[in-house]
Length: 55
Image 1 (cartoon, rainbow, N blue to C red):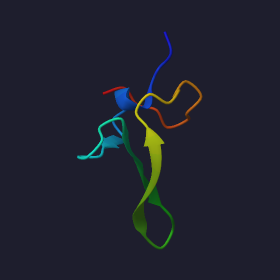
Image 2: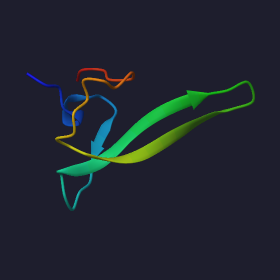
Image 3: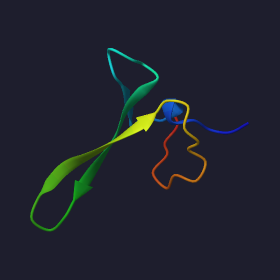
Image 4: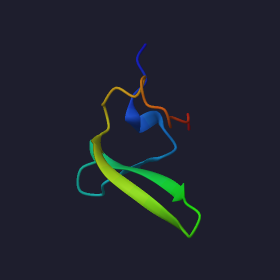
């Protein structure tokens, strides 16, 4: 069974359309910490994602 983005702790669905959302990652560099978000589909394949973390 393939893992999907909607099963990840980093996936935040959109209120208008829960089949789309953002993958939000916290990034820390020597000067600051910030969040990076990218749009993804809830059903997208996450099996090759290096930051996948099961809910």
